[in-house]
Length: 436
Image (cartoon, rainbow, N blue to C red; front, side, top):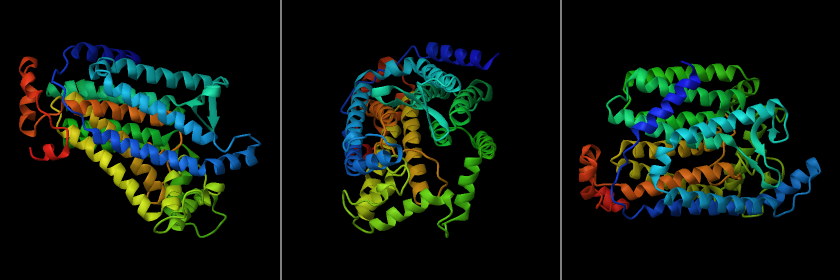
């Protein structure tokens, strides 16, 4: 059977198996998820307001463009509003709509990536090339759109439902019925993201999404080790096949640059300078030096370093505390869901969000090779923020269906008619969770 045929069979089989949905009665959601997300978005907007004029000036001088001082702030504000709308839709639309259409979401993501690849090869204007890679659709006045984010969301929902059903059937470690199909989806996704779009950072995020779900589903040590070895081997091959990836690894292994001529370490050197210059309390809003053109991608991938320069160590610790608190709330919700499919959706979102946070910050402080991945909810950009907000909105909705720890096992195995009693629990807050 061809790979395409196998994928269609998986989509059809999942849809048929997903006919019955959980009917736990809704209760009060975990509002702290929305609070922490909103605070992070607000901080990101403040940063863009602070360095947007400098970014516009750098681009105008370098490329002869005509960006206004408020261009990036306005774009980020619009993206924020769209992200809030995506959060609201995912929080309100019944989760069964997402779980029943996971296969369609996955196919939509793959189709969008395939169309982008074809448009890039044909040199069509709609395919936006940047730094030697084609990762965005150019939508003119509407900005750009990154189809990889659609693929992430599709993989999240599809694999969560598929793996959740297999886990409930006791087949989480079945190689032919579970692991190979998951591997097929991952391999096709990696083909588009890492090989065609040359985006290793997004590829790592996809692996983190699936890896988190496999871990929570209860994959055994033997299969887990085989998967890790396979990913490691594939990673070495993919790194060795691209000279820019080899350069990044070599630069990382060399450590701090001792000469100004080391262009490969230029970005990380200036990121460290920015964080170091910030000191304890920062230089203040509007006083960033690195954002004036010294630090590449100051508004995107390097925004953590700019925040360190502006807010200092104290400010960075506050931002890290918010990021950690948001991820912790996801773990709390995941731990108190009785339906394995829903549990895996939250686990995948945690892997998605956490991989971005860890990879971005680790690369900016020099403990991981530079990957070029955004800091969620804080970096400039619309597509990433919109789909991460949508995933968080889905987690927020699922926090309405959490149950007592003492009732989780019962909730997993009882039939739909008896779940009405379990659904009366109201335990979305931390204090109530921790009492059970």
